[in-house]
Structures are given as C-alpha cells and as structure tokens.
Image 1 (cartoon, one colour):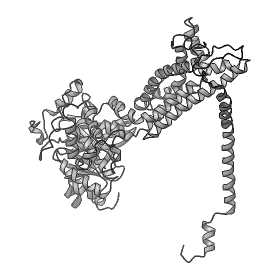
Image 2 (cartoon, rainbow over the protein chains, first blue to last red):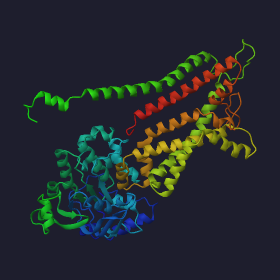
Image 3 (cartoon, each protein chain N blue to C red):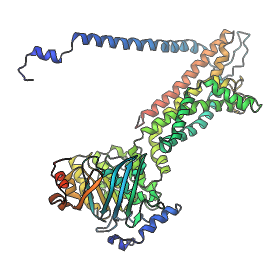
Image 4 (spheres, rainbow over the protein chains, first blue to last red):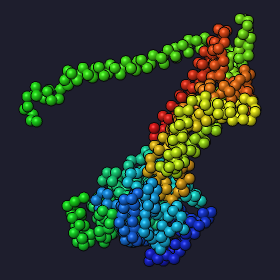
Length: 300
Length: 298
C-alpha cells in the first residue's frame, strides 16, 4: 500500500500541490510523477479523496477579438460532479477548455483571468502547461481513440506519452479499464484496434485513457451526445463512481443528465454565468428567471 | 397531395420529361467521348512501349552495360544494367535527402507554422518550386557544384538535383495528409498531458504514415523519370557504378542518348529502357496503392 498522498486535500487547500506543479515546470528533467503513480497496481479505494478543487476567477476568453467568456467566477468543489448547462454557443465548452488550457491550442484564442487548481494558478507563467494537462484530464464529445493503436495501447498511450512507463504497465492499463467499467468487455481482446469498439465502448476507452495518467480533475465535454441511451447510462454510472477519486466537470445539453449525475449545476448564457447551486435547487427553485425559463424548456 | 389524385397529375409532377432525358443522354455522351479521347494517347503509349520495348528485352538486357559494339550485327550492343543501377542509387539518395526534410517542413507547416506569415511565405515558395522546370534544378546544381567548385559530374550531384525536384512534391503531399489527421486526435493526446513533440511522433505521424508513403512514392516516381536534371550533373558514363562520387548512368539519360543514335538496335535499346523505366515506376505505384489501401484516412 502506498500512503495517501495528501491528507489535507479534502479541505481543498493543499500546500503541497502548488509547488509540485511549478517544480515540474521548472525541472523538466525530474521524472518523478508526483501527481500520478500511486494508483496503478491497485484499484482505487472507495472513498479515496483525490480530487482537487478548481476555481475560476474573472475568467475571460477570446477568439481573435470576439469575447466568448465575459468574466466568470465559479468554483468546482473537489470530488463533486458539477454540470454546466446552457444553450448552444453560450461558452460552456470554451470555459472547460480554459481549465486545462486547451483553449489556447486554437489559433487566435486566448484567455485572461485566473484558473486556480487548488491554490495554483494554471495560467501562471512559471507553470508547465503539460503538467497542468496531466493533472486535468479531458473527455471529448466524440469518442476519439487513437486509430493506429490497439485497445491496450490506447490506454497505455497516456502513460507512454507522459513518460510514466515505469512499473507494471499491464496492471496500470487493467486498473484504468476496470475503473472505466470496460475491463470485462475487452479483457480478451486487448490487442484489437480501439476503433473497432462500439461508440459507447470507445468513449469509455477514452475515459480509461484519461484515468490511466491519474488526473485530479476530469473535464467532460458533452461525453454522451454521440451515444445511445444505454451507453449514456453506463457513462453516467461511471461518473458517479469516478467522483470518489476525481473532481468532475461535465458540459451537457441534456438537462435530465445534469439532474441525474451532478451534485451542483451551473447555468450559462451568452458567455456569462447566470447562476450556480446544488442541482436540485437549480432545477426546482432557481434564483434567476432566465434559469427557470431554460430548465423548463422555454428556450434553448 | 391526397391518395385519390389523378395519376396523370403525378406523372406530370414526378415523371422525367423527354427534354431532360435528351439532355442527360447528351451530357453523358460528351463525358464518355472526352474520356475516350483522353485514353487514346495513353493506350497508344503503352502499346508502342510494349511492342518495341519487349522486342529489345533479351536475356542479357538487364545484366550487361551499354558498352557493346554497334558496328557488327553479330555482337551484342549491351543492356541497361548501369542505367538501372544508376537510377536506383541516385533516386535512393535523393529520397534520403528530400523525404526527411520534406516531412519536417510539412510537420512544421501543419503543427507549428499554421497560418503565420512565415508559414504562408514557405507555402508560396514551395508552390513556386513545384512549378519550376526540372532543367532549372539541374542548371542550379551545375552552376553551384560543378562550375562553382570546378569539379566534375558526380552521382551525388545528380541526386541533389533530383532531391530539389522532389522536395516540393513531398512537402505538399505530406502537408495535405497531415491536415487530414483529425484535430481531435491531437487534442486528446495533448489533453492527456503529452508534450507536443511526442504527440507528433506517436500520434500524428503514425496516423498519417500510409498517406505520406503514397505521396513520397509519387515524388520518387517523378524523380526516377527525369532526364534534364541529370544531363549535366551526373552523366554520363556507360559503366555500372556503385560510387555516387563518380559519373553515373541512369535510365532517362540512357534513353536520351540512345534515341539519338543512327543505329536501329541502339534506338531499340532506348525502347527497352523506356519500358524498364515505366515498369519500375509502375511497381512503385503499385506498392504505393497497396500501402494507401491500408490507410485509415485517405
């Protein structure tokens, strides 16, 4: 058994976390994966508190000169599922892409403000963007397993790409596939191409791939919008499982889904946060009339 | 429209009118004629190549150098061994130069340069290079490496001229294929926390590989058929050579010099060499097709 990494993490204030990330940024040669490693050989223990909280402070995002996010302050509690709802084009995806700094991969896109992972500003110039993305995983709308790789290699890809090959690769892959609820379905065909799985299985494969590098936060950008209801249900069950070890932010167009999986729900409109609160509250007695109109289906 | 509507009305609405049928037939006919017209020269070329070339192929055609005696009918005029060897050696070296550089340029354009002004400038000059006549590349190498250094022809200088010729083709074809790699793949790899260079080497390039092989082989095929860049860079000798630092024969140059000969048997050897070249390039294209069939992108 490995010792729990950081007993203070539940409180959301981890004095260790910030130096960890910055240290890795300044010392690229250091290959001790502080943020990962532990998981691997053992399945995640129940109730394990490994998620980190994320706080947005005055987050603004731009594509060229158009402002997509107009100053968002929002907190995602550790080991909770927060759903982001809102009509198309309101900036939901842009917002979560700002959290792991994927937003800046789009030519002409930039972000302002602060995104605090625990106490660390991921936009601080001293922070290594690669380390940020290792700590904050992402699952995309369309399942996108690497087409040239087998099921096994897809999951191992994260470990290989981030130079964490040490230890028992097979055990790590199995643990990740088990966590994603996919192991029983693929155990006897790990060497088949990942692209040969069904859409729902592919998406769980992508979740396993993200889990393998042991992130603290997982961002999901409409992970079920390309899936049928049964596959969707499996992903939702998985989300409920996973929040014990990671903080989850999920963008969804499906309000029933938000109601089913999320502890808290945030409603966005035109690049601004309208309100955030416990999911039940948002859906039953929202504080803002626009939220009520949206959740009752009057627009959007 | 209700189910009781008269049939005549339905026919008028949904039937194909005679005028449209006629237009359709004319359009189809025109396209067919154009296709046949385009095929005629192709078929004729293949026909003459086979007819004349196969006649020139003999048991020692591929095993002897074109150094034989042309005055006596009884003796052999020699084959094209040195030309085949020279073409393969020079094109191989040219590929070894042009392919890594070309792929690197394409990776830079797609992954880093994107739509910066420098990337646009590079693309512009690559396009210009694509249109430059091959003899200009030969002249360039001739001026720089032969006149400039006061040295003589050499196989590697021919290779350099060919690699200049291949470079724009490799860059453009590789760029197109790299752009086909879904952005989602790069994003998901980057989101895993992979450094960009690793994403390129382990995700982007393997995904694009089959398509890039096709483009590279097309560039190789083009280089293998060029005479002009080799005429005053590598030519000419009749002997087989494994020394890229010395004179080197090649199939296109062999054809070029043979067709100017007054001796019928030598002209026939040119046909044989031409057929050899076409078969070589055909084999390359077959390989390219087999590989691209496995491509998941193209």
